[in-house]
Image 1 (cartoon, helix red, strand yellow):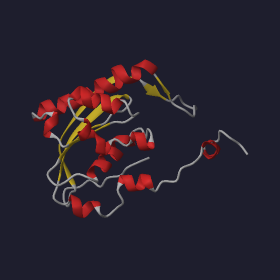
Image 2 (cartoon, rainbow, N blue to C red; image 1 turned 60 degrees about the vertical axis):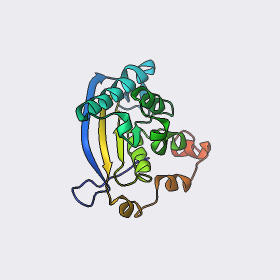
Image 3 (tube, rainbow, N blue to C red; image 1 turned 45 degrees about the horizontal axis):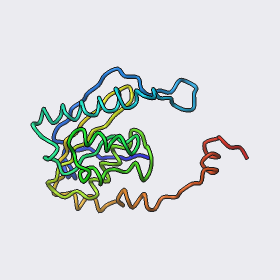
Image 4 (cartoon, rainbow, N blue to C red; image 1 turned 180 degrees about the vertical axis):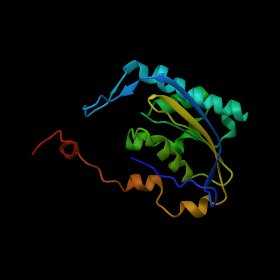
Length: 189
């Protein structure tokens, strides 16, 4: 999966209020040269990788801005699975209601780096002018970027130009495992 955004300074659907980055050298996920599939560090994937970085970036941004979870209408976190974003939202004090619109991993699986951006798009599909969205990404290696985003008055005009994320998901074409295996070269006929 993927998501694309037009970044500019006029006719904005949403405005980035502030950002904060948190990085360390934590090799939790990698793919060796010539290998078709990546490997991960097992127990290191959650701690010290995902949770340390996501909470570090999120807390850093809120501290810098002087904000709290209740200052945001929505929150989107990196979604490697269905459990991590729910757990990290609770750790930070965000409610289930705040994360539900952007929680797409149970519907489409792990889209890796795109998960946060697709979750943000799904949230922008329902957000109203003036509402605020808190977004925190995660990248193995490891680092997280947190964003405070405010929805503008142009959101309704702009979002009607394309189908919603949930419409795309509903209109998807599902492949059975045999077809998937064939496309991935795991099955030769």
